[in-house]
Length: 412
Image (cartoon, rainbow, N blue to C red):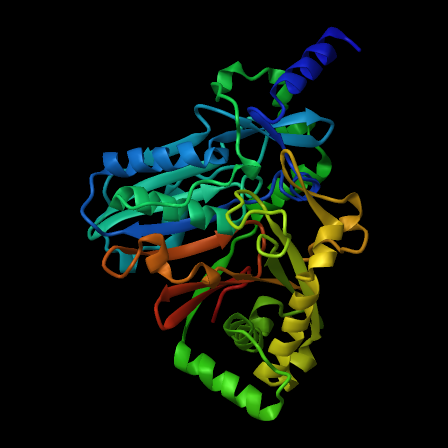
């Protein structure tokens, strides 16, 4: 091994688990070049911007994986490097518009977007003062965390702003050493995009070439209870959740708009394994999801009742949440969750022409749990990465859920 190789190996051996955390096989295979999670968070209480920044940095000090950059530790193998400058906070001049009238595309042009590429920061927030408060446009790489972890960080941030207690961070996926400045990272760990695999390069090109459109649906608890009662009267085996009902409703209404040329549709449901795998903390920070896949023909979607669709979705989710199955494919290493190599054997690649992702964040309770009651603020927009067809469900307030629908085709 040459001197460069010896130096690289020594650095990794010294810092693994301290200020370097390797990506899991799923993170490593799927996320480099992938688009970030992005959330527009509106905060309408009169609070100094400097206080908001200081409280965010304090929250990230506790949940320190958000202060990281990506490095390449071997051929197409990546890790998170703990950095003093891994977080980007920008504050733009005020915009003379109220939160209810923001243009999502305009904000996207103004905000900082992170990239999951070597050397890049992986968490950024752009503060934009509005007429009635402050908009925080958040961009977070999926290599750092899943949506549940991001929402937990926002919860902790809100608690610190309001002076409330918050849950201590899980130690199962945090840096345990000291951060370094980005310019201290050896260049051998941060190759340019041109030196990465063609698959990663193609992801970046695809991300930059496809425009997406969004709309929202608002669903009340009364509507959901009505569907549940109909389900019980038809067949006692149709014991279905609110999220499964909402997904079924959206699937019937929007499948032709989202995937106009598909004969068959795969609904992909991320399944949180925090409360399934006995070794994984309930507030594990990072990526702790697998996916359940439910397939339908378009004729089936049109012909089936909402509860019949929901029950089929439920069966696939229940199968994925089986504890024995989850323990077979995943385990907790000293660096965090790791998945067995054979997890990809029976999986098929994401296909934007026939896949719809359905992402449920309502189990985080309602926005009051994030310190975002109607008197404090709201979530105005959420994007889940490079997926061009998806449903994302959030509790807007007690008694009502909103679903954001994303498509690469315009809604007419």
